[in-house]
Image 1 (cartoon, helix red, strand yellow):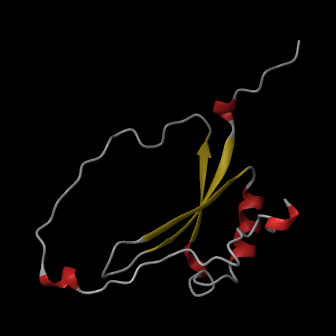
Image 2: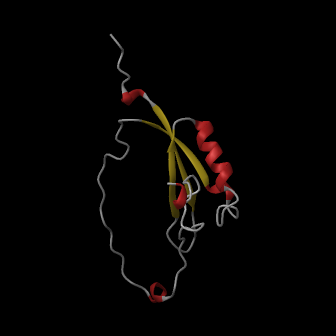
Image 3: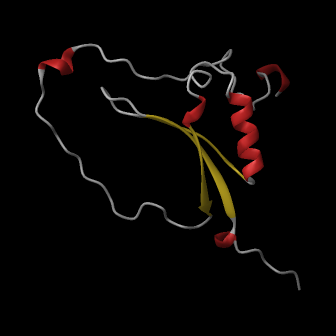
Length: 112
């Protein structure tokens, strides 16, 4: 009889890019989930030359996760703050920088 692998005991590596600002909400980009830490590090190496990432290479973070485990168990609340005049000025925010609208690990559209 073959043994069944229990997914709850598997570890994966969750790759994020995070950047904090003093004047606006932080940037959190979920890059991907990898089977090994070395695969996550290889993704960082590929991305470090891309726009934005190359200016802030220290923003990458690899987080170890156990499959099947609920990470956030507390719910959330919405907090409303009074508006101030500064809220009406244009505030910069981060957007994805697409290379011909193809993800770094995705083959070009004509190869699919």
